[in-house]
Length: 108
Image (tube, rainbow, N blue to C red; front, side):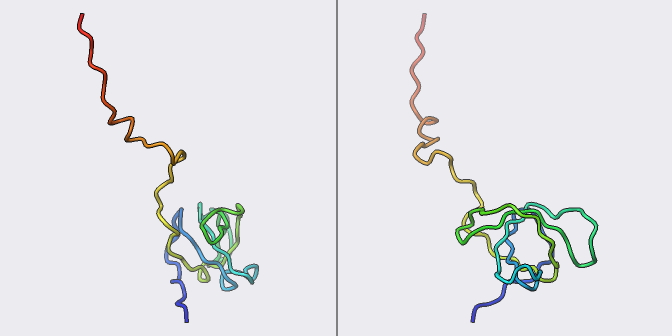
């Protein structure tokens, strides 16, 4: 049997959350959610508005959403892969140009 994700104790931007029916009835089908921020809106005790992205199995954003959730029902997941940004041009090597030999200066 798979272990359940841990309950949330503090939310931070970038957290990957697992939202199920325990967080809200709208999650009859559980989703993964990458948190951008907790919205500072008045609400009931133990509930909160979250701003972020629903993500797929690879961690790619599929929809931006604002969600009303029960904090006790949120579970955190380990991040998918490295948090380091991927290079925009994977074919280019930034170190290749930095280590290229310089032309000698011509003397007058």
